[in-house]
Length: 114
Image (tube, rainbow, N blue to C red):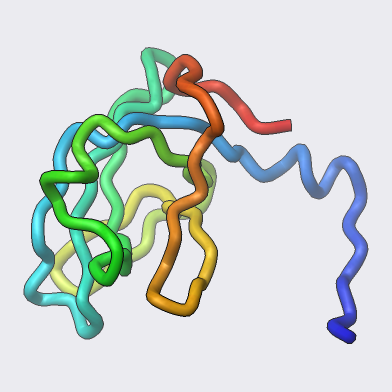
């Protein structure tokens, strides 16, 4: 059995999990592991942000455009090779690769989880 660390409600509230729509996706050949560069629109309050995502096993850039995803938008910037990541794209490790965390229905870009 996996031991799960408990957090407080305030810990959870500190994580900005927001919905955004992928507006651009392209290969990231300079990455150490296969990845895409994504641009995601998180609505007027947050705007567009970019990230690198290791989701190449289950998704193509063309199939990602227009999809809504869940991202952590309040992490500090992270340099990934020549690319600056501005948020964390969330997903789950499956048998065939990373499965994106997505809302069950379309919601407004920038909507917050929680």
